[in-house]
Image (cartoon, rainbow, N blue to C red):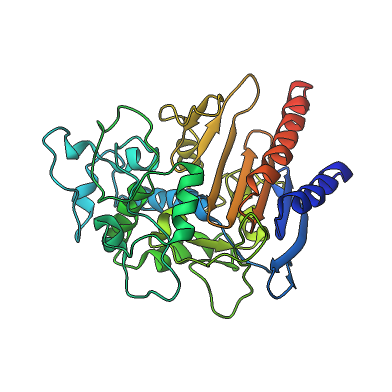
Length: 368
């Protein structure tokens, strides 16, 4: 880790009231650097360590993609079949406008299924008994003031029942709800809970012993914080597949490494998935978000940024008080990961990752 990156993280954490952060640098498909900064909880002052678990939020979608591809490799799921045929306990509302058979696992993974994103709010920790079906049907408790402020700041849509609102396959429509359908599919097809299936199929085989969907009561976790650096409510997220993963920085880096060749001849997928499945997840399945002015493309559970050099594969995560990012260049074996417990931390990780990305591309153009 270079001095400038370390100084940038420390300076920007202080400026942005981000209490805690952890950082990983990957070279040649293996972890080279791990760093922990700040505090896991501002109210107690407990420090962030390499054993501290952070909520990964939407990076959960990349993990879910691995689980879906495992079912595909086992011959239990066809990515281009109607997802409704794989779900037993819920179905999309009928539509007079759109063919629901065109809502497929592939389109859900690439956010091209035309599914709404509404209905998925964090549940206050003292409110128990709500399920993923409640989220799909928009029967969760009403949003509190903290949630409404968050929605207003990010210009997020109000909550409504999940349905198909644009033509499947027509274009990018980011949807947490789409991953809820994938979660139901995984459970119905595997006969296991989503958490158990991913633990057995992805986390354990990759050596991610400090990762889980949901909090583990006996492990150290960070707490989320607002823009003022004070503790937020630590919400429960009803859709694990979209936003429920918790991991240490080392485990997130292991996950990032697993999609690349390793230094000792390890192949992409590391024996958990075939290299062809990794390549399929990292292939373009249409355009993605264009709002930043960058030409993002949609992989399966991943975002792609292509240019004159190697393709960058990544996913970020964020919600009330949490931010995360993993970004890799599979062709060069380079990667960077960051997890943070502050609302303003996008302004922390974006310049750090952009500087790293530029350095990798510069090296690649130089024939490294």
